[in-house]
Image (tube, rainbow, N blue to C red; front, side, top):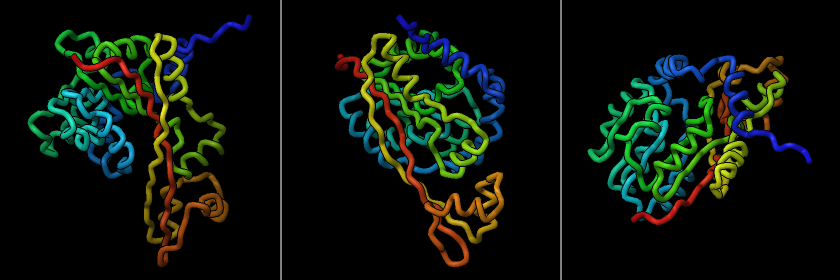
Length: 263
């Protein structure tokens, strides 16, 4: 009989192999300290994902957003529930969220995820959302067990499997870097813990405009001659005056674990 690979050991090995060493909390905090001020401008809106989540939060009295950051999902979902906790370990990211004047029922909590999951003062919420927040967590088993414990009714995990913009995808292909398969790994890990996650793929779109070809190629940073780089992106480009309109779609993978009705 072929041995089944230990998904948790495989996840840990992948995380610890990251050259950025962002699995070290101080490294990850430094990363977000540098990115916080410009983060929102670099992120596409997620209207279809927000609409899907908002619909499923009906009847939930509380939401815990793990890795809430600047409130990309927290804020548009906040009015769907009566109590929201935004948890993040970056004070700079939470400072950006605070500057947006969130509603009074949205509470900010700055704490490392591992510490928060062990902290008895963090009470369970009807729904727990973890969007792109587990990629550099070495102990996936502990993280998922903790998230499941904190979710009274629903747990939502969001990932994109590294399939974002065409230029980043092409850059990875040229570098021979395998595409991460985090959504499938998370699904297998939840199943190994006895959970039964439902999977859904939500398609979102993004569009950028560039005044000229030079600006487009500077954004793409492809290790190719200009003509070849432009040809590689051509399926996603539309002429826009002297420049370009750059449009693509991407998929958000949602894993949903239904844990029971709220008491």
